Structure formats: C-alpha cells, structure tokens
Length: 434
Ligand code: ADP
Ligand code: ASP
Ligand code: MG
Image (cartoon, rainbow, N blue to C red):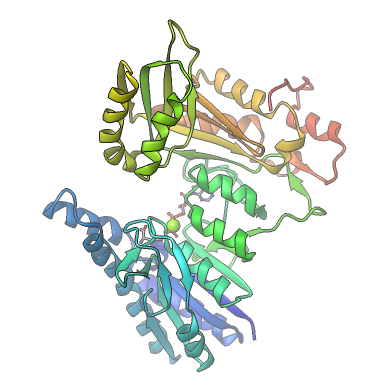
C-alpha cells in the first residue's frame, strides 16, 4: 500500500473551515487506499504572533524558552486537524515532533535534524491510523524542545518521508507549485512542471521560500520525490526530483529574490596575506552565515571587503566585527540593510554562454545598478537596492521570456543554435559572460 507524507502550510490551516477542508482532502486520500502521514504548520500567522508576544516580555528571550513557546503553534493545528478527521469518522492520532521521533542537535531556533526514529509513527500507521505530526519542531540530543528555523515544517515533512520510505512527499501550500518567479511579484509567472533538486536548492538558497532550503537538501540526499501543490485545488503542481538526462530541460528555470540579507563593508583593510581569514574565521566561529563576498581593488595598500549576511545574524555579527576592525586595523565598518538579491537559476546555463550578460543587460535597461555579483554553475545573483528588487525581478523575467513555455525549452542533448535564437529572439548574438 502506498505511503504518502502530506504537509499543509500555515495558510492552508489558517482557520477552522480550512482545517475541515484539509481533513476532507486527507480522508479522500486515505479512502483511495493510501497510508497517510500529515505534517502541519501553525495556523496562519501564529508563529509571528507568538514571536511578537515574546518580544513584549523581553527583547532577547532564551532560545530554549522561545522554542518552547513557538512549538505551541503547531500543537494547536495538529490537535484541531486530528479532531476534524475523527469527526469525519476516520481514526487519526497526533504526535508532537518529539513523540514522532524527530531528534535534532541543540541549536535552538535553527536546529538540524540528526535522526528520525519513526517507529511510533510507523506503528500508528500500521494500526490503521492517519498520523498527524507537528511540523517545525523536534527534541534535542539533550532532551530539550527545539525548532528547525522558519519554514521548518517543510523539513519535518521531507525528513519523515525519507525515514518512512514514503512513495512521495506532497507539500500543500497557497500557490499551485514552483513558479518562474514569486507569483505575488510577477502575476504572469508560469508554473513549472518539474525542477531538479539542484535547481530547487539554488532557488531556495536565493530566497524562493516556497520550500525551505534544508528540506530540499534532505530531499536530494535521500531522493525523496517531492510534489509542491496547492491545498485549494486538485491541479498537479511541480515535481522536485532528480534530473533525468532524457527529459526536456529549460535553459533558465526561474528568477528568485531575497530581501532578508544585509550588506557589511569593512573599509580600509590593509591588503596583505591572511586578512580575509582574520575577518571571516571569527564570524564563522560565531555561526554567522556569510553569503556573497567582494574585495575591491587595493589603493594605497588598503582595500574594502564587502559581504552579505542574513539580517537576523547582524546582532550576533556586530560585536565580532568591532573586534575584527581593531585587530586588522581597518578604517571602519558600514552596515547597509536596504539591499536585496535577485538570482537567475537554470541548469541549462552550464552549457549556454551569454546568460549572465543578458541578465546584466536587463538590469541596465531598467536603470538598476548592480552592487555585488556572484555565480555558481547554474545561478547568477546580483545585489541591488531593496526598493528596486521588484523591478529587477520583472525585468529579468521579461528578458528571458519566462512566461512563455515554448520558447525556452530544449531537448537534451542540445543543438545549441535553436535555443540561443530562442533566448535572443531579435537575432543578436548573446554576449560572453557565464
Ligand atoms: P506555507 O505557509 O504553505 O509554507 P510559504 O509562505 O512558506 O507557504 O511559501 C509559499 C510562498 O512562497 C508563496 O505564497 C509565494 O509567495 C512564495 N514564493 C516565492 N518564490 C516562489 C516561486 N518561485 N514559486 C512559488 N512560490 C514562491
Ligand atoms: N510555523 C513555522 C513558521 O511560520 C514553520 C512553518 O510554517 O513551516 O516558520
Ligand atoms: Mg513555508
């Protein structure tokens, strides 16, 4: 009998009516003969509201207590959904993350799953229950309650799917799948039929919060077939899966944007060996996640180093930066929170020159200045001003004709000329670049 893990996000369980609708969908799936394990998020904006409540008590709550508070959100929705399923005459049972055997490390607020001891969930499924698990939470190796970071219910679902050897993990959310850009920003964005784990990793790392990055890492590592789809319709969504060499692939898959990072510049750093290590080692030791780094050309034996980091890591980074400035003899440190990152992702980039150049053209034509650039083999990212990011996403989406399915698809292995013409309908040769 097939075993499916389904995860329902906050909007999908936003009120009692929606919870009842989810219960009907779950019972429908169970009636069709599948074994069903459900993972739920907290209702609507509950997690934000609980965080706000904590901030009214103290600006810096202990991680342990904040986690204890936040996990209450998912407990509420798991119990209500279980009641709704029972009400429809089906046997269901709810488990907290801890009861479901989600074991994590001890890092409160962004714990990593180290083990899933799924025996209790399996036994409950085998006894004929629909099992409902609270997402976003686990129990640490020190027996404290932990949370997995924002969006963490996705990771609970994929990790459970891996541990249960489920046939698929369905992520039910408030959009129809993974789109060529955030559909809230680009209404003409197109739903993708499938994306590879690698592309989804780059998209999630670049701010497409439809799947939490860690969940995609998990899906790739354990080859979990993941289906992102809407809880408000029966339409097929987007499959996140292994790349199949025979399948049709897009040169470019999607544009992502991220407004959650800030830029730090260390000014007037002496230009000598070892400086970068003096700057970044202490930040790494403090657990600060550095993303893009640029070092400007030296003048007078001094240089500026700029990098981006999550805004939420700034408070932890500031005292470290202060010490670093003194130690390396820099002239100063500047922090700029008003930045955003726009990224273009596509597996076909590896074999197609000119993609980066076309992206820079799109930004230039829109009059948008680029501050920092970074690339991987299947991604180009640019830092721009925060207030220009929506325009940047739209300009790039338009430039690569991402709303139009037919134009950008290639058969693999490719004959290149046709696709390049497709990317450049005016017939101009694409420039160098990536
Ligand atoms: P949930 O509460 O179901 O976990 P999230 O808010 O975490 O939902 O993720 C879904 C949201 O992700 C969508 O509402 C959409 O605004 C956003 N999003 C960003 N980029 C994309 C994309 N490329 N495709 C689809 N959704 C995206
Ligand atoms: N409720 C948590 C959050 O809002 C986890 C999740 O929804 O995935 O981040
Ligand atoms: Mg989410």
